[in-house]
Amino acid sequence: MESLERQVQQLEENMSHMHVTNPHISEGSVGWHIEHCLLVMISIISALKKSDINSYRWVFNWRRAWIFFTQKIPRGRVKAPKYVDPLHIDPLHVTDQCVKDQCVKDSLAKVHQLLEEMKTLPSKTYFHHFIFGDLDLKDTHYFLRIHTHHHLKIMAELINDDAKARQ
Image (cartoon, rainbow, N blue to C red; front, side, top):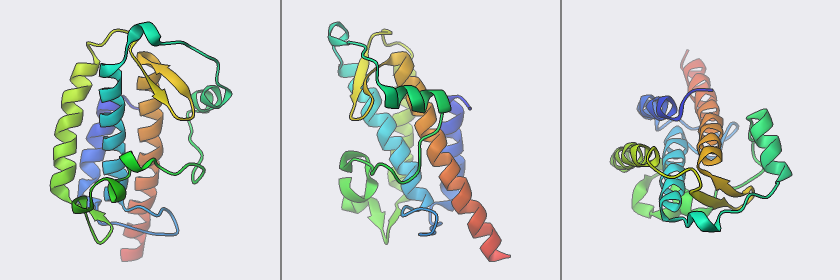
């Protein structure tokens, strides 16, 4: 699996396909998946920055252990929380189910800044995931890589299907 920085670069490269959709593959367009990944990174890294390192408590979580072991998130099992769903957070973000380019560019700039800040955070900073519980900095970084990889695979499927349809 690629580094998080490389994955963000791949998200940027997919921007030229933001309009691509296929409801048989995913409810969201490529643009939706890009913006969703960026919103997740923004909200999680922001939560890391605000966390109280003295409150962090590791607790075994079998779902987290399984996802981290397999490095795969099953498709269609969990719906994105509204605060990281581009269709719910700001209606101005979208036109006909497609995310606007400028919104994605703004989010990308914010993610680049936050990834740099993330490198300076103490190892016991954490955020609380609604399924996996508390994730420290190292586990958060790993989760972000798995999550982004999951969406990059869906985007690749959407883009490849679109290319086949044009032939």
